[in-house]
Amino acid sequence: MPIYHNDLTAPELVEWALRLEKDTILTDRGSLSVRSYEKTGRSPKDKRIVETDDVKDHVDWGAVNMALSEDSFQKVKARAVQFLDSSPHVFVVRAYAGHDPRYRLKIMIKTTRAYHALFIRTMLIVPTAQQLAEFGDPDYTIYNAGEQWADPTVPGLTSKTCIAVNFKTREQVILGSQYAGEMKKGVLTVMFEIMPRSGHLTMHASANEGRSKDVTVFFGLSGTGKTTLSADSKRALIGDDEHVWTDQGIFNIEGGCYAKAIGLNPKTEYDIWNAVRFGSVAENCDIDLKTREIDFSKETICKNTRVAYPLDFIAGAKTVAVGEHPKNMVFLCNDAFGVLPPVARLTPDQALFWFVTGYTANVPGVESGNKGLTPTFSPCFGGPFLVRSPLFYGEQLVEKMNAYKTRVWLVNTGYTGGAGGGGGKRFPLKFTRAILDCIHDGSLDAAQYETLPGWGLQIPVALPHKHIAEAPHLLNPKNAWQDKAKLLQSSNQLIALFQENFNKRFGSKSTPSMKRALPQFIAPSAKL
Image (cartoon, rainbow, N blue to C red; front, side):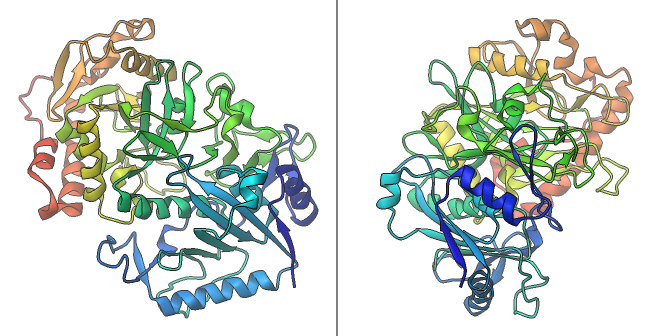
């Protein structure tokens, strides 16, 4: 029988992790340095949703949501429970998902690693002593037996890893992956199914709030700046990754942040840099074993280095992380093709299109094995976590933005003047932050606009901000590119990829409004 460690504090979990887990040390900053070993990121091909009567008719079944029978789930769960029951130590964490008490879920996690317990305690909302005394039965239970391999002979499994969610029994099972992010994203997947039942929109997005209580929501895939840009010294952070938009406003699902650590720099990301201290988790980061310093420039272990820290480690963050209906919504992309403007104002039709498209394109790295630029299209900027059709969530978004008069902006944090790795330069962070300042003070909405050929995007001619006045040519790609023929070629190349993705992903399911927003090829005679 294991020793059960129930609802330990962060210092207690740090002590147990240092005592029990190899390759786990305390850094010079006080953060806990840990390894997730073979799996250093999510395993989307091993995600399964149990095909039960309550969800089978509206799950968007396919490559993202693969079905698992109830019988197979019982076998998977039994393997996980057996492993937990035979382990010397089991850490139990009870916490909340959701800052709005009307909709928060009570989550219980059982795991064999103290690091996993510290991580999920950090990422969810820690109950008070009184709330723990009144906690009762959990709404969802996570059996994290990641140190144990799954049995690939179980029908419905294709490897030794299984990440399974059962909405009927309200359980999640993790086998064959010690990557802590699987717990966090499992909770998000649950919210993508549970919240629509009450008419609310779950968002894979960050959010912050201005002094006048105006809320901005940031959607964006990895590498677009979602965490960095939401941590703004002039605004209060609501959350960096997961939110729900209800009939009263938005609330953060989480109690912590999970930021990419590679390249973390105090000059540009001081708030996040300062949050990496005692009580935080540094996952798969390179450590100097003599000085115990974290080297954020290295990616020897993996490219997906991460730091997890409580929300209140960010100065000025809202401890009760709720806000009013969003005044502004920002779709972030890192356009490595270099053809999109730094900002564009979207119509409702365009907002729906860009939301369900979920575009970004990073400069290829060693892992990709691809020398060319390859875009990523992830519906609703969270494709791996969606349960229902992207169009379902897209219609929810448009309905809410129309009801609450939310402005929607496309912001490119990527390249201009050329492609990434091909002569283009990335927009300076201060330039992007200036764009956001203009969104927040209303000067961007009041600007004079022109239309970007082919894309139909409305882009500002000029903006009254010192950092933008220093480089006004960056507002329109045609002024940033010297080779206009190359710009035309690159634009049409990316438009072709957009059209291919649109036709393959949506085809006959697309609405007239989405078709109106689909980019069209630019004629060779067009004046850029």
